[in-house]
Image (cartoon, rainbow, N blue to C red; front, side, top):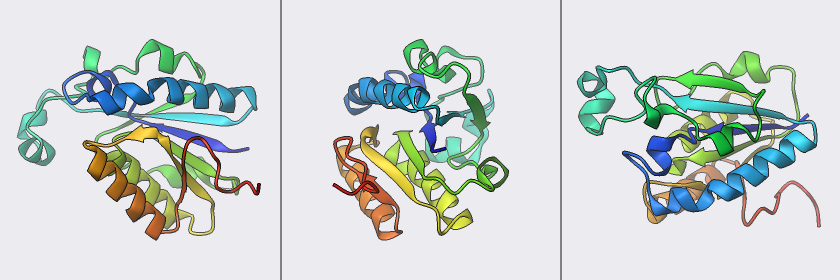
Length: 180
């Protein structure tokens, strides 16, 4: 069973406090990808960037002084059309860029793990590299058409970084592990 990890597809990253036109453009691709996984009986896991009201006093808040994804706020929510694409999927709240608890969730499974979401250059790359370090022999894929970065340039730079670390990059929905 393949696993799709939908990284931080939350209102604040799509069209809220840290939103961008690039992020809004990928929403339909993300929903389509999630529905494909559900239809195939594969696993979907959502991550949710989760901060407390004291965010501005944290180290991250000092470097990124924009309150966002404050637990319980509208910006913290995963929009309905995205969440409803896999309503029974596990949701992981993570207080920082990368989730460190992947090992028990993915242990024993050898099928590919695919990551999509926001932001390519912060949370997607952090989680992809964490999973790669935990499972160096597993196929890990990032679908570029279902990700957006803080800027188009940082999105592309992050894709290159992940490719250099032997993470497969899918473009335009083409899965790199399938032979033509």
